[in-house]
Image 1 (cartoon, rainbow, N blue to C red):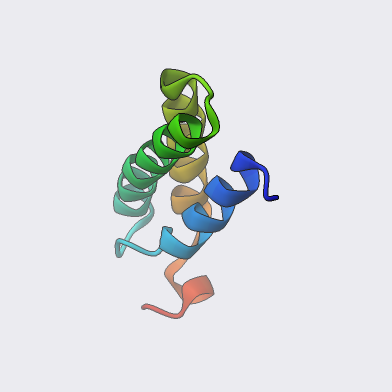
Image 2: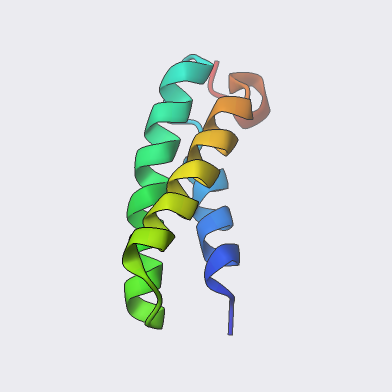
Length: 74
């Protein structure tokens, strides 16, 4: 069974390209990560708030650090 952190990371990486510049990718990655983190925590019986925070921070970091050239959407 996949760990929740691995699921969140995979989703954040696949959705990190939702924006043209690092700021918009960080915002969209953070929002998507927070939703995925909360959802994963709810499914696995964890703390939803903690899942949202961890997912949001991870998603924002991945979104902000990913360049459009990396994902091929320039």
